[in-house]
Length: 113
Length: 107
Image 1 (cartoon, rainbow over the protein chains, first blue to last red):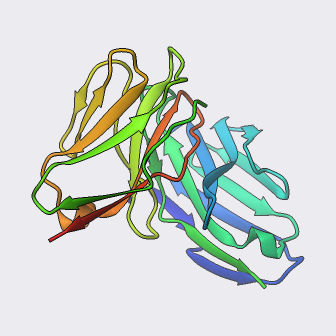
Image 2 (cartoon, rainbow over the protein chains, first blue to last red; image 1 turned 30 degrees about the horizontal axis):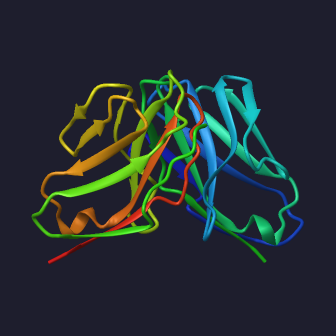
């Protein structure tokens, strides 16, 4: 979706290095989410944000942190990447809760070697 | 979020209607039913959602039973491009994705 841009699209990094993934939206949506997708597990929620500087943990938040200093940007940081964090990461936005659908980005494929 | 049950896979002939079932017997009163699909490794795509009433848009129709314990997503004229994993989710804010139904549309 043109309104959501994830960067980088692909990244290979070494174990123990910090990594930041960026989600940028032009939809002015208040709600933003980070998911990871792995074979056999489907999509799992990492962190989410209900507004600027308002974030909370999801199902699989250990090893991850997030920041939202502007409405349009939601950053996901792996402080010290591990091989178990090799995954495809999807960002999603939502205009409101309840009667709104999610819009997903195209994903970032992260490989930790 | 309430849990949903979907068949792991379904087949459909091109041009025919695809009816994808979903059970959500523990749905709460304020929870919506959402349907998404994911084609290969792309990001999930929103299809439709509803609370109590049946809904229709340009992609599909959503039929929700009166007791809200189950629903059916209908793709009226399936095409090869509709081959994807379809997720039925119930929730209000954060959404929990299950394993979905792999729909294979064949010529």
